[in-house]
Amino acid sequence: MKYQTNEFKKGLKLEIDGNPNIIVENQFIKPGKGQPFNKVRLKNLVTGNVIERTFKSGESVDGADMEERTMQYLYSDGAIYHFMDTKSHEQVEISKGQLGENWKWIQESMDCDVLFYKGNPLTVEIPNFSVIEITYCEPGVKGNTATGATKPATLETGAEINVPLFVEQGDKVKVDTRSGEYVERYKG
Amino acid sequence: MSLTTREVLRLRQSYLRKAREFFSGLGVLEVDTEMLSEFPALDPNIEPFSTLYFEPGYESKPTVAGGAPLYLHTSPEYAMKRLLSEGSGPIYQISHVFRNGEKGRIHNPEFTMLEWYRPGFSLEDLMEEVSGLIETMLRARAPIQITYRELFERELSLNPLSVSCEELIEKCVALNLPPPDSFKNEKDTLLQYLLSQAIEPGLGFDRPTFVYNYPPSQAALAKVSSDHDKVAMRFELYINGIELANGYHELTDPVELEQRFAKENRLRIRQGKRPLPPDLHLLDALKKGLPECSGVALGFDRLIMLATKAESVHDILPLSNWKP
Image (tube, rainbow over all chains, first blue to last red; front, side, top):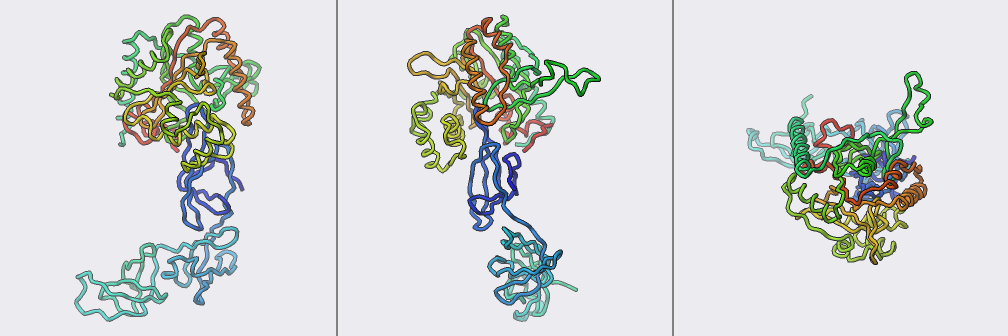
């Protein structure tokens, strides 16, 4: 599918030099008495690099063959993470590398947004918060609730975060998956 | 700087008043020409809006000029030149103009143009008058003037009149500004691209800057000088990187005008655009006799944008349909 310059806007995904790119900024420029063009800033969705391109007004560009699907996380056998498409029940394998930092917070049955490029998984987005069990941490000293001091804790995924001293091994904690920070102890 | 709607309205009113006072003091008459015309302005890079006239009951059968479209003016230029040839004397106009397809930070498909014509003025005389206007309206510093050629030589070390397309493309690439592929064989398009991307962002900040003596191929309706180094008697005014006004020592020869119309249509066709009918009324006016004069078109909304230090022209147009 091709897009014309008059359809360009932030968030549109285009194929540039064989790579999927997303428009970050689109400017219409018309020199006095001259031909108008679009100056576009794009982010490469594979490398993360930002590039600038100009297109003559009226030119058309290929859209990136991308699809976003909701996939449920099933389990992992170390290097490969298994997901299931919630609609088609098709199972898909995604490598730990493609998860970025998300391997630290992903939980069984979690619904994730997976971006596919030409049919292959590219990136995985998980919810903003995750509830995870602490599999190891040192016991806290009684009475130490107000000082703000923290101690390291290991989560069942293998990731390490800092938690307040009153949190115990076996507790479940809510973590902000974007910052990797402890939010609160999970009750219930 | 964000203004309330009321502040924007009051500001606009005060600028309209200042403009009228400026021209009244100089004895320049305000005119208010029709916006709908059988003929659009002919420019390779300006697209008009068009519409149809029909009698009541005949909505499906438009009746004027065999059903031919009417065009909203892209500038009051042609109408004002007809008035000049009828002996109007010096005239100015503040009107909405319409340019299809132009929307962006400093573009709106419908915008306000302040345009005026001075019989007997040279290009330099008119630049002086434009300076007077912006010094009054914006309390701007006295502008400086530089020729198109000097500007390119100073900023990019190339002579725009003699440079080749290849050298221009090399310069674009060296500045990390690769042009769209389809621009690569068009010298004027490359010059305009370089001017807008490599030079304009720094032009007219310290002092408003007039760029004048354009290449003859970028003359539009300006006279081309007859001396050895042919230049178009045209100027543009830049303030804070924004192109604010475009002025000419006006072309008065009807034969030359007809040739330019034909050339512009050929260029439109080459670019895959529909050709537009040449304005027969304007040609008649020039045959009758357009007085020697200089004229200028100034973006009034951009003037207000500069005065308020707005980020975008839409910030000063409360009811804009076209915020990008």
